[in-house]
Image (cartoon, rainbow, N blue to C red; front, side, top):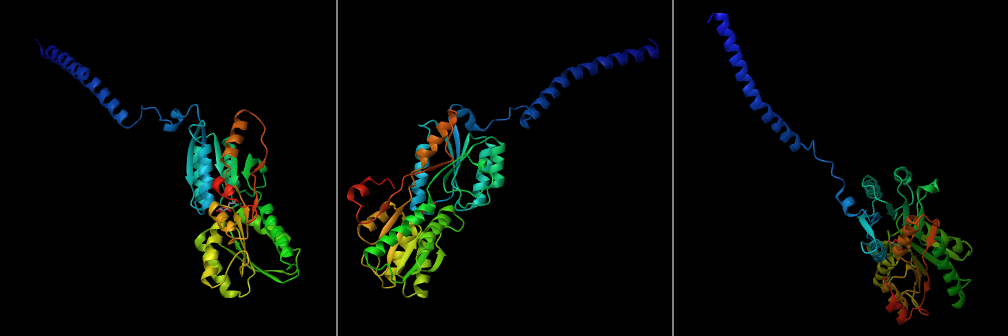
Length: 355
Ligand code: GZL
């Protein structure tokens, strides 16, 4: 066989040989590539959020609670968690913002990315919500405010508010003081007042301050010596009261915008050697009317407690049900609230208290 012929045979043998190698290598390479791709997740389905598959027939609600600063707040949280429960057909995603607005904004954005059906927001302060509420609106997620309100130009940024009328609560405190002074024949006496205010910027604090000031402004003989922020907490309430007692030796009335600050203030007053309440040196006006405070009303330690009802969960779930069935909802729902003094805090009221 000549050289050319021989080389031709070699080439075809080589070609057959190479074909044989490729026939083995190619599927191995494809298999390796597939395994590598799988390992890199190139082929797996993008997992939807795990909860979506579990909650296809549940209403998914993201709740941004502002914190856990007071007994009232704890009751409010328990109320919404009772109402927005699995048994009631909901899937709850709950976040405690620990008094920080930026944490609430983060939580809302997280709810949006998880495509919840509704957002419930208890706003720690009333300003600074336009952007994130606009994002929720663009995502088509209704926002229901709970407890406190927000200051926004575009009222369509939230669907409804379930809460309390804090301005009216403040006016109730002022009207009670008017009646009290008449009964004590002190209507024309100079009355020195200090105010322990709740969280700065919170609608509850702003409303109560405004409401009480409206009534106080009608009495030239009422002197509001000073108003300080006590953040709605026992600790800060005591600290602020100690400072005010150092500054003013003739305080007649303390207006404390929640029971937790009142507990701290009473401790400070007693430690200063003064007495409080009915027939005491200093008259105590408080807000919230939680169980432990009502016991002090019954004992005459707190003169009056303006109720602020934290049981708002049922109202929120009702608003959601109305929306789910395509019905119109009110813009504002106020929970029932009372004014408690020694005269109407009975054992039955105390026993029936849910908070
Ligand atoms: C009132 C609520 C207030 C309570 C406080 O609507 O926002 O916040 O009065 C609570 O006890 O901390």
